[in-house]
Length: 227
Image (cartoon, rainbow, N blue to C red; front, side, top):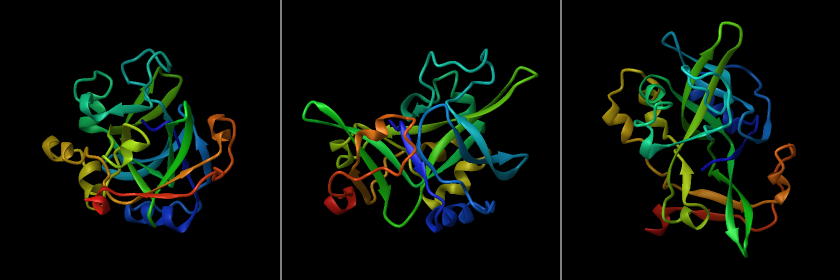
């Protein structure tokens, strides 16, 4: 799963936004982002790409409105096309959610140790879906991050991980006309190098909006290197 992540206004994130054709100037740094908070999402609107603020917890367009009865901040790739909430967004409203790093909790000595995960010299492009809900008074854009089974090496931290898109798949992922068989091929674990760093448990409190403090050595995780 992916329950917290960070976006830092730095050159690496802006490279990602430039590749996506998004030019908005400074992007506010957001730390320890938690579900239901507002996050920047790249999506299509009337055939053009734009970056919109969305609630990180999907509100299906057919629902009665925001609810936390079911966890809707992550969408499991294995069942996304069978889900009433996700099947429409998966077909027609796919998104890219930029991130600098994300946090997973590793079981260690009977406790859960938060671990910050980031890529080498690149921002992360999470595969996501979005929807639009309105009751005629309130209008809500919302999103979910798609997750998949972890790679063998990442499995030492958590059994699942967010789907991280490669640059060559950005256009196809966002395009509504891309055939679904091609989209399904992108729902794979990220096997390239990731850097995992144990961080302070202060991050467990969603009200803590500080840069995660390392409490251990960073470890390189890569199935390619371990092959």
